[in-house]
Length: 116
Length: 110
Image (cartoon, rainbow over the protein chains, first blue to last red):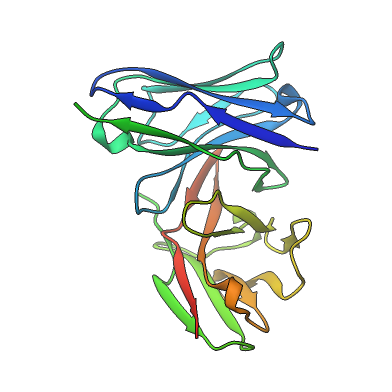
């Protein structure tokens, strides 16, 4: 069974850094396209980043230069390193398996709160 | 800046048919944008309904269908049920690895 478990969220001060993890089971992360999508409280979904099976990475303009998507093949885990966090980054962050032009098998989400 | 447009809200009667759309602030949506659709209820992760324009995700009933209608992506729900009352989001592939979600449509069944 395919499953994604998002962890690593929490309360962080403005300007701080945080790393989110997405542990996968039932498939091999490095063979797939994997994405992060976020949702600010009471707002809609926002695509954040994607990593291809080739290792190519892409980012939304809102996070480019601050966030880095990566994966650890030995732990079959996807990561999102978030730096220079601001209040606008407060959101639930979801990872998702991305194939055939769709987002699938969503994680349960992890809440990041940026506040002093 | 590309904006993906969705109706903020829509209402449908039980048993009725509703079509939600997904457009672009500038230009037309085509199969090259590979529209996909997601259902979300409060506090839950999104559920994938339709991907790559018209492919139903596993376990999604066939009363949900996706298409291109005119210059927009479209999600049609036939025979609406009470538990279809949710938020619906579309996302478009803009090329060069970039995706953009619409603002979502709040569907009421009454």
